[in-house]
Image (cartoon, rainbow, N blue to C red; front, side, top):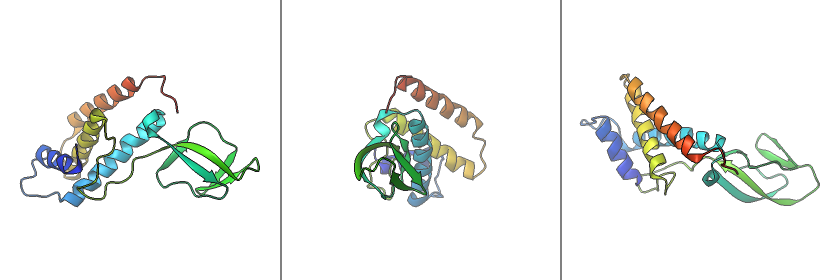
Length: 160
C-alpha cells in the first residue's frame, strides 16, 4: 500500500464526499497513527524496529529514537550521548519510530507488513472520525483487537 491508497481508504471509510479532509490532513492522521503503533512495536522490542548507527561521544541521537537495544556504557542527557568507558566510537543499536510521511509519493511506514499498515490506516480513520465527534467506540474496540493480534503474533521471543 502506498500513501495515496491509504488516503483513499481514509476518505472512503469516513464518507468524505465533500473533501473535508485534505491530503495534508490525512497525512497528519497517518503520521499520528504510525507513531502510536511504532511506539507499541518498539515497547514490544519488535526486531524490524531496530536500527544501527556508528555513535561518537557527544553525538545527538536521531529524532525518531525510542530506546536502546540492550545496555551500553553511555549516558544520555537531553538527547546527547556521553561515553562512560573512554571510547570514542561504538556501534549502537536502538529502536526507532518510523520516519514521518511528508507527501503522497512517500512509502507507507511498515512496508512489507500489510497487517500493521491496515492498523495504521484504521487508526487514522478513527482519528479523523473522532475529530468530528463521531461515536468511535466500536472502531476503537476493533482497533484494540487488531493491535492485540499483532502483539500476540510477534510473540514473547522478540528481541532487539
